[in-house]
Length: 582
Image (cartoon, rainbow, N blue to C red; front, side):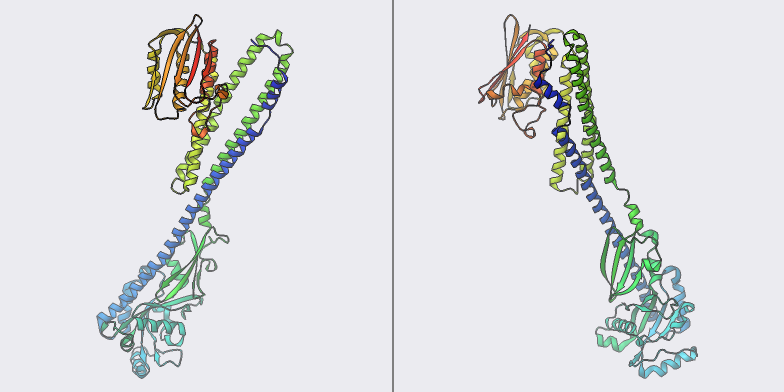
């Protein structure tokens, strides 16, 4: 055993090994950067999903309003169809029976009533009033105005909530009058601009909904004909707050709504006190203009506190915490290793003074140190597996949304994790070389070569030959040596086909086994370098391997008191010459 005390250069290396150097910090910094990158991408994807969910909620809200307004339109046209079908003058009792049959309180939640407004020309006003007063002596048209025609509310049900509206003339106010004229001229259902219903004690925003009907039950083709043959409109009054309560149940949405018509407020979740989920700092918001029966309603929709609670389960947070935990573990591992190295150096210093007299103790220390190296290398697999699993999760969760470049980065991360795992496995194999002694046995080089070819699945175009020679050697170590050399020749070959030969010779002390290939060769200045750990002649990303193969071959051969040399001119062909002690 070599008992030479530690010299100055060796000591400097050991001191450096006991410090957190640039390489250690680089690994930790890269790992933290990867963690935050993964967190950022996950956070971005989560935000995109949340925004899509908000857009879906907003679209559902607008669709519900559209569907409900379509339902009310059908009710109005149903009234028109009833009037056309009767084809006689509609009396109050007739309309009351029809309206009550609709059960508007349950069938049309949010509607304030349904009624008839007749168009009365100035010349026909006396006849109209005489007819109405014969049935309702207290009936009046109000308020007074200067328009040449009248549009009084003749019937409205249920009467109990709408009594103040009886006789109200739509021509007295611009929003009511303009919308009823548009309905008359277009023959289509139309809404008024924002108004306050006379029957609404709270004086909140509302509107009227008109559907016109004409003489003979047919809509004329031209505007002039429609103006001449208009009879009246079936209408429904709405208080906007009641409409929204009937249309949008709170439990059905995670958004708050404000609706404006030409800059005038129709409805606001927050000010109406309908919802206590208003979020003053919403995660998302949007503004949408929607055409409704001659009017444009502007929906201002924003996420509320219920949406914020739903979005609170932030998976990216757990990824960040998990990644930082792994990073902390790596840092702790490096600190542990450097401290262990310092302790080992201190121990070596302590032992140097009595090295000659404590050979037995030194052997024990070496065994402990080898065991420590084995355990340390083995335990590196755990955080590496965690990093690889984390990368796999990110790849699976974000596969359809990540840019191509980011997917390539994730693929590169996983490939490097796999290469690191191979490196650790080779390190463990390297650490075990001196632990097991194999007995000599009879080995046929030809048969062993066939097993190697089968094991490494030699590519098409490559051949590997060996002589039919039997020798007495430890079989497993020799097989590892030859397999690594053959695999190395194939891996570093620069052509799609190649020839590898295993040759045998001997002298009185050694078996001489040569592995020869016709590959690119190894320049003389690299003959020593390639036999060391982690050394390759190509960039790591261009060659599969850990840089451990030839180092392992060298250690196995030297463990059995042999030697290995390289013979190559660096241009073409390489020979690995093994001298194996007999």
